[in-house]
Structures are given as structure tokens and as C-alpha cells.
Length: 355
Ligand code: GN1
Ligand code: MG
Image 1: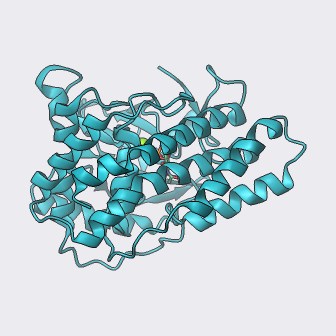
Image 2: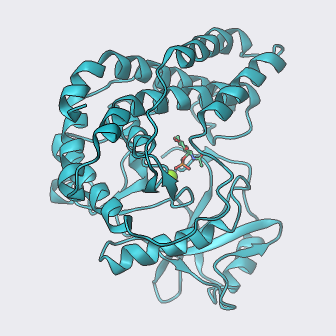
């Protein structure tokens, strides 16, 4: 098990004070999960009941909990399992305490994977996400506090340009610079995504944000829920599924410098999504879906490359890498190599998508 380092690590007494706001003083708390942004703890009450406590990253406005509430309630009404926010004893969706923002959610008892195993699992994952999207298609909610712009590609490109312009003294500059320039050039020559109306989306469909019933046998074919709902927002389907595919179709883990794009995983997850969703996307959405994974793998390569120099955003594994920059450089290489693979398979993907 790796240990992801983030900015926040909380003192036991702070955790205890936080737990008291949910009437859970004295409960056991253990770090869990390997997300790169929030800090997550599994809480076990004296009764044995388990919940999930998270310290929200300062990149998020706490008002996003209104979005999470609207989305999870709609999912629950549609019979789709989801983590649900547990309000504090004072009835608040989140708690501001000791300089941090805290929230409690129901636990999803299952397992997550850092890579899909095979086409059957990809199909199951796609079908679950298709149902998830269909359940939210009619959601009437005004999304708030969406300033973060997870897929604001121009913003990410600008940050990389800033990094390359400002941090020439950085120990990794000589390695990041040629990669960064190549990524900026690739972004210049990639056709823009066709405009499509937004749909209510998860916003971060990497495979480890999906919980499955079990690690093998039938359980690994049974998605239970999507977790990490901070980025729920209306967005083009091409961003949403582009992000899923850049993660789901890569057999290599995110920090291996050489990606391993698997076409069958792409095909199977798409067939699953269509079956789960019911209604097919419009012709222009299909066209956008062709470029979506190219843009998103490139965008994530750009984000990792910028953080290889700024070293202030993504969590990193201190047991495997010398520093945050080194870990992010490996990730940037992995996503750049995935971008190449996506780009090289455009024609075959077009056939599958009917684009
Ligand atoms: C972050 O929090 P986590 O690990 O699920 C990031 C995503 C990236 C992903 C790459 C808000 O997701 O955008 O695709 O890392 N989330 C945010 O692993 O930046
Ligand atoms: Mg996560």
C-alpha cells in the first residue's frame, strides 16, 4: 500500500474534535484511499458502523456540497447506490474547523482498482456510468461554486507556460522543459472539440473513483458506486468520457512512464455505456467523443508537467519517488505516452464510435 503525501495531515486531537460534531467522539479513525487531492479517513464507531470522513482540499469551495447533495439525492431516487452526505449534529452539510473543511459520508463497502482487468469489467463499468448519467439527465439543480474548472484546458496550458517561464532553476527543469514544450505544441495542433451541450457529469471518472463489490470473481464485475463527487458539474460528455477512457483504457498505472492503451477496454466500456444509458449520443457528441480522450490525456499530461515544477498540487508517494516533482514527471510522461496512443488509434476509435 502506498502512502500518498498531501498538504494536510491532521493531529489526532483535531480529528477527535471533528468527530464530536457528528456525535462520533471516540470512534476509531484510519487513513484510507489513495486519492490525490482530499485526505480521507475511515471512521468506525463503537457500534461498528463505518463512515467516511474527508478533509476537503482547499482547491474546492465548500459550497460544492450543495451540488453533491442534489446529485446524490437524485441518484438515490433513481435507485443508484451512492455515498450520501451525513450532516453534522447541527444539521450542516460540512464543518469548518481548525482551518479545515470536513465532511462525513456513508461508506461504500467495496474495493477499487487502479486499472481495469479485462473487457468484461470495462463493460460493467461503462454500463454503470451510463445508468448514472441517465439518472441525472433531468436533474433540476443550479450548480454552484464551480470555479475550479477541472477541464479548463486553456487554464492548464497557461499554468504550464508559467512554470516553464518561471522555474528555470528547478532541479527537474532540463527534463520537464522538452516534454512541456512538446505538449504545448501538441495542444496547438490538435483540433478543438466540437461544441456540445453539457450534461450532468461526475467530472473525475478515473477508475479508482469507482467502487466494486469484490476484488475477483463476480464481485469485480459489479460496480457499486462512484465516489469522489467534488467535481460533479454540467460538462460536455467528451470531457467526462474522455477522462474515463484515459484512465480505463490504460493497463499501466498512472505513474508508469509508458502507457499501455488497450483497445478492447475502450470498445467494451463504450458498448457498456450505450447499453446502460439507453439513449445514444448525438452525432456531434460522437465526433467530440473521438477527440475527448486525446484532449484529456494531453491536458492531464500538461497538469502533471506543470506540477513537476510547481510541486504544489497533486499528492505523491514518498516511498517510491524522491520528491513531488519526480512523481509528477513520471505521471506526465505516462499521460504524454497515452496521448500518443490515443492519437494513433483515432481511426479505429472512430469506427467503434460511429463518428
Ligand atoms: C485528481 O482526487 P483524485 O485523485 O480522484 C484530480 C483529477 C485528476 C486525477 C489524476 C480535482 O483526482 O482531475 O484527473 O487526480 N482531481 C482534481 O489522477 O484535480
Ligand atoms: Mg479519488
